[in-house]
Amino acid sequence: MAGRGRPTGPTGPVLTRGLALLGAFGPARPAMTLSQLARHAGMPLSTAHRLLGELVEWGALERDDTGSYRIGLRLWELGALAPRGQGLRERALPFLEDLSQITRENVQLAVREGTEVVFVERIGGSGAVPVLTRVGGRFALTATGVGLVLLAHAPTEVQEDVLGGRIERFTERTVTDADELRRMLADVRVNGFSISDRQVTMDALSVGAPIQDERGQVVAAVSLVVRHGTASPHTLTPLVRTSARAITRALAEGYRAG
Amino acid sequence: MAGRGRPTGPTGPVLTRGLALLGAFGPARPAMTLSQLARHAGMPLSTAHRLLGELVEWGALERDDTGSYRIGLRLWELGALAPRGQGLRERALPFLEDLSQITRENVQLAVREGTEVVFVERIGGSGAVPVLTRVGGRFALTATGVGLVLLAHAPTEVQEDVLGGRIERFTERTVTDADELRRMLADVRVNGFSISDRQVTMDALSVGAPIQDERGQVVAAVSLVVRHGTASPHTLTPLVRTSARAITRALAEGYRAG
DNA sequence: CAAACCCTTCCATTTTCCGGAAGGCCTGTT
DNA sequence: AACAGGCCTTCCGGAAAATGGAAGGGTTTG
Image (cartoon, rainbow over all chains, first blue to last red):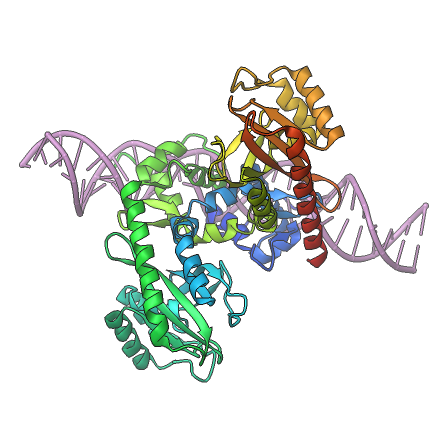
């Protein structure tokens, strides 16, 4: 019995380590074995084993018949309570469907988390231009239509954080100059909509508009993504703005009701 | 400085206490203040404060502008990875919509967790009979159509656990006799469908059928809920069974595809 | 302006956590 | 049939992280 009771190095808060195990899951890895989880979360097998036991006990994770761990129902139930996730999605969905029906183009709904866009819903027109994004996916704030809207209305601190850092380039037309972006963001605030012309892929153009809460704060953004050259932004802008305002109104209803 | 360094009583695993904070959230309480959370999770304010800080840091929770805590986007993203939650829901949805279109009745999709049914999707016919259930909601295994299917194919241990315990009564027709339930479950296994006739409410009848995984294990159940007296179970049964088999097939496709 | 909330921070004690090692169970190989 | 390699599970004494009353600051209420 030499292995027991030896000095242990500093580790960190347990709760954080437990969350690190949850964070190892992702679209690419929806199920993992103990060893995989321990590796991804960067902790010894025995530690991971103990913490996973607690997570399973509570229902955050489940084990399938092969012993692999996967996300449990309890976490799904909890996730459905996220106001900026499922809540927003449910309220906005009818309007997004209308917009999709009318235009036959891609419709996107997104919120900002930190310095990233998180896509909450995406409706793809059948013949519409393919887009890079996925529901639950994240993207840079500086390139997409929704991103520009959300960045334009983000706290100054966040804006400077994004503009001061490295600005990712996706195409030859991606705007990576901080001052030019600053001008674009000012335009977005003045005009009430954003345009991302071939900044993400060379065949796509997107038009975004802000969704506000009952206090006028911008909490989300909608966008239409069309093939570059097929439609003038001028015809799209009113549609997107109208949709955004309708959703804003629907959210306000929700606040009053409950 | 008398308050510091006093003996602390036994508490329990930190991770479990952190999860208890998450567990305090629910449909009835989607947002809470620090004090509310501490009360519901049964821990001192300062302890709750520290743990909540870690949860917010990681993105499991967010604070709104009033300082209240609510479920964060990160948890929504994670929840969407639950194979038995969002995964099942997405694959089954087209079939459920077909069933709903054809019958104009309530369609339900559910899985078992422990000794309860968890509803994963519910499509309500516009003029259909009102049902007690909610997506994400839980219910006894012994009363509903889906519940009877899931219980009939649950491990013996679970069945005995349920039948040996107190069996909840909802109406005068709720079956609460363990032996009668055992006979009903045997019928469900032989026939491949279940019937719950006015066992939940006096105006509803539901017909359930099992959904299997690629290995033949029953992993979920579908049901139609109709107003009692409006339709004969005999006409509903083939519809529900066909739908269940179609979903079973769709799941198998998914397994093969990856 | 005091009382009643709420939230946040502090830190000495003690509780929980830590994780290498050992052992069990498979599957595939020699 | 013995072995090697892969998983998972359990053990427990020392060490690090967790604990929670009290104190202090902020805001709303009467």
